[in-house]
Image (cartoon, rainbow, N blue to C red; front, top):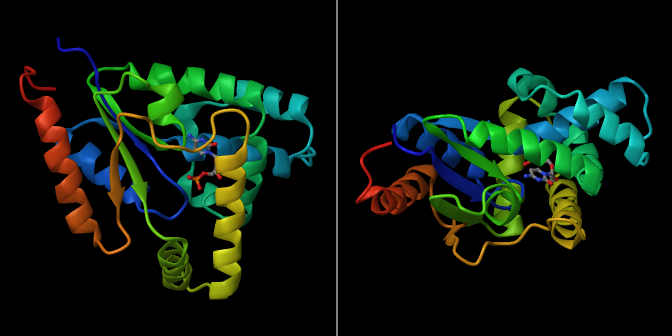
Length: 216
Ligand code: DC
């Protein structure tokens, strides 16, 4: 059997990497892991149990007990959970524990698409394909607002933009595994692209990487 084939997708919140990851996983019949959900699950459990987010030992214990096979996107997608996830994601021990689980997932045949902040740089530095997906903060804020409104919620564009900028600063500025493109990542700016165009562009990049390989 061929070695597991791994596609690493990184980028800031709201750039469209989740949708892209799902489309690529469906198309190439690969497993899919949204690694943001693992940080969200740790934060969510801590909020539920009234554990202080600024306690690294509590975050570490929560991370250790996490089962990546049991992540409930509906519960974890709440805005407040994303904010809390960004806070617990700064702890090196939490990252070490979650990265180990993510690597085991990536190594499971036939391979996987993983999306997050540090996949191409830390989790899977030998990934077959690395994509770094970005869009301007304004475009990402407008997309987030549209998502919230589609779920019949309401939010203020300026507020959503401020939240996105704060998350970017924290995710790019942390000492351990900051968000940055791997040196060998393909950059994909989706500011002016719809999802179909982004998917076709990414698919073409993956197909080049698959040339010379005996399938997935
Ligand atoms: O992609 P997301 O919004 O679900 O991610 C939530 C937070 O988790 C994000 O602000 C930073 C953190 N995260 C991380 O540090 N490393 C990852 N690979 C994925 C997410």
